[in-house]
Length: 517
Ligand SMILES: Cc1ncc(C[n+]2csc(CCOP(=O)(O)OP(=O)(O)O)c2C)c(N)n1
Ligand SMILES: [Mg+2]
Image (cartoon, rainbow, N blue to C red; front, side, top):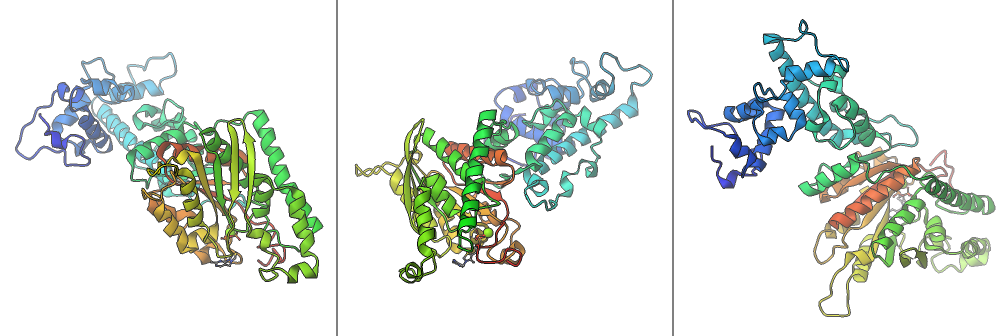
C-alpha cells in the first residue's frame, strides 16, 4: 500500500480500507518512509484492534516488522507464530509461571482458551492505556494537596478495578510497562502503577494535558514521571530548608508577640513560600538573571521583605514601633491605616555563586492584582537591550514573579488581562512565574462562594499554561515544584503557575478573630 504523503503524520483519520478495495501492506512500509504513520496506526490499533484496516492489523500481529521488533513489550503481546516472537498466550503463561519454571504442558491454553486470553490481554492493554491517561489528566483530583487533610475528590477513571476488563493484579503483571510509554520505573503495569500513582496523586499534582503544544506535553510528562526535578534533597539541603522555615516562622511569632493586635497579614500556613522564592531566584541567577522583580499583595509581604529582599529586621520593627504612637498614625499620608508597609517598594541584592542579583519588590496599591501588568512590563523592560535601536530581547536576564492571592487570582479581571499578554511577541517575558499563595480563603469568603471553578488557578488553563499544585506542608515537594516550573520556563519560555495550597492560621489579619473569619 502506498500512503499519499499528505496523509503521512495526519492524526485520527479513518484508517479502514475503503469497502471493496484490496490493499497490501509490506513490512517495508512500516520500516521505511512511513514509519511515523505506522506508529500512529499502532496507537489506534492498541486502543481498538478493529479500528485499523485489516492488513495493518495483520501486519502488527505478524511480528514481522522492525517497528514491532523495536517494542519488546509488543513482541511479547502480539502473536508472531513462525517469527520467533512469543504469542500473547505464551507471554501470559510466562508472566504467571514461577521464576525458573516453564509452564506445564497440561495447563498451557490452546485453541479457544488461547484466543480468549489474547483478547483479555489486548483488552487489558487498552484499559491500561486508559488508566495511564486518566492519571495524567485527572490524577490531581485524587492528590493529597490540602494540609488541612480534606479528602480528595478522586475520580472513577483512576480506579483500575472499574475498567473493562478490570485490571486485576494478575492482568497488570502481564502488561509490559514499555507498551504504555510511561517513564516511571517498573517492568510491568503492576510494578509501575504505584509509582504512577505517587507521581500524579501525591503531594504535588499537575494539570498539563490541556496544553495544545505536543512537545510541551511530552516534555512535561517525561520530566514529571522520571522525577528528574524531584530527587530527594541531600541532608545539607534538608537542614538548610528547615533553618529557613524556622526563620520565617520565628520572625512572625516574634512580631505577633511583641506587637499584639497589629496587622501582619501572616504567612503562616504558607511558610514554604520563602524557600520557594529562594529556589526560583537561585535557578534563575545561575541561568544568567541579574534582576528579579516581584509583585505581591499583603499576604506574607513582611516575610518577603525581610528574607527575600533582605531588608534588616530593625527597619521593619521601627515601622511597627512607629505605628504605636497616635501621631504616627494620624500623620500617615495614606490615611492612618497602618498599612503603609504592605504597599511600599524595597530593593535588595543577593550574592550567589553565579554572581550578584538585584531583587525588587515593587510598590503596590490596595487594589488587588493591579500590580500584575506593571511587573510584567518592568521585567520586559529589564530584558530588553535598549542600548541599540534593535531592542534585543533576552528573557534570561530578568525573572518576573507574581504572587497572587487565591481569591484574587480567580476574581480579578486584570489577572486575565495580564495572562493575555504572556505570549504576545511585544509583551512576553519569556515566562512569568506565578505563585498562588493559596490559603483557601479570601478575607471571609470560602472558595465555593468566591469562584465558579474547582481550582483558584483554573483561569490559567485557558491560556495554555501548565499548573503545578503543591501541598504547602511538604517543603521538599514545594521546592521540587519550583525546579520543574523553572525548567519549563527555561525550556519553553512560557508562563507557569504554582498553586501553593496551604491554610491561614491567624485570620485575615491579626485584628480579627481567626475562629470567625
Ligand atoms: C480589588 C480589590 N477588591 C477587594 C479588596 C478588599 N480585600 C482586601 S484583601 C481581600 C481578600 C483577598 O483574598 P485572597 O486573594 O485570597 O488573599 P489573602 O488575603 O487570602 O491572602 C479583599 C477582598 C481589595 N483590596 N482590592
Ligand atoms: Mg486567600
